[in-house]
Amino acid sequence: MTEKFLARLLDEASRPYRAAGHFAYGFSRGKLSSDCIFRELLRRGVFPAAGGRFLDLGCGQAGLASWLLAARKLFESGDWPADWPEPPRVAELRGFELMAKDVARGRAALADREPQVVIRQGDICKTDFGRADIVTILDVLHYIDHPNQEDILRRVRAALPPGGVFLTRVGDAEAGLYFHVCDWVDRAVTFVRGHRLPTLYYRSLADWAELLRKLGFEVETVPMSEGKPFANVMLVARVPV
View 1 (cartoon, rainbow, N blue to C red):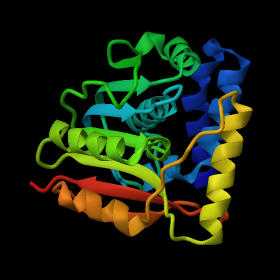
View 2 (tube, helix red, strand yellow):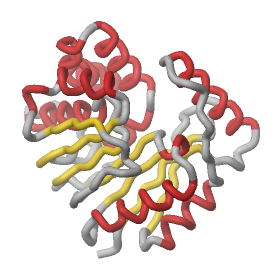
View 3 (cartoon, rainbow, N blue to C red):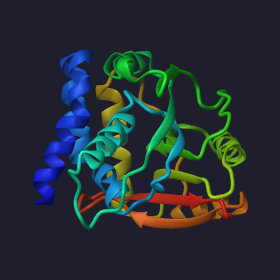
View 4 (cartoon, rainbow, N blue to C red):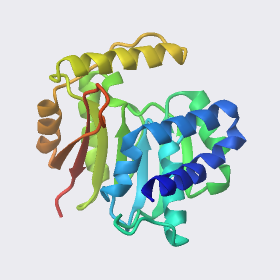
């Protein structure tokens, strides 16, 4: 039953990308169906149902935005697993992405959702975050040097109110062989997408968690590789009320 529901959710979330071209549509379906974090965000109720103002940093072509909007639409139509919590309401979602082509695809796909969803090109090391209730950074921080990582996280904390949520996914640099597989995959994907091979800036899971705790977050860690030989970990950091 859940698999059939996930197929309907995938169809709803990827449909807008037809307007952005074959690559955007294919990438959307591949990413949203194969990456377990999208399903787990909903199944675990990581975001409160009240939702609110989302800020997605390094948003790519805004797949997370489309996924959350599709989830809410299906829920409100009565199509939702009985044992899953209510998905979040998206009052507004601001996405920032460095790559112009990703921004263009995201805007083309979600043009009819403005001003609820606004995708802008920008370097998150320099962008003004403003205020948000939920901040997400998925698979981006390791492309940024350590001093800028810490500055970004400080500014994320400053953007959030009591009860706010920060979600990120990182690779655990102390995970041995699985970490090295993650590193190789990151470099390969970056190269295939036409970018230079980057310098990557990893930390151990313990270091990530300690950094967030020092900033005043309560931190939950959840393995997020689902049987794949990766060292991915989801960090759910909450601002105490």
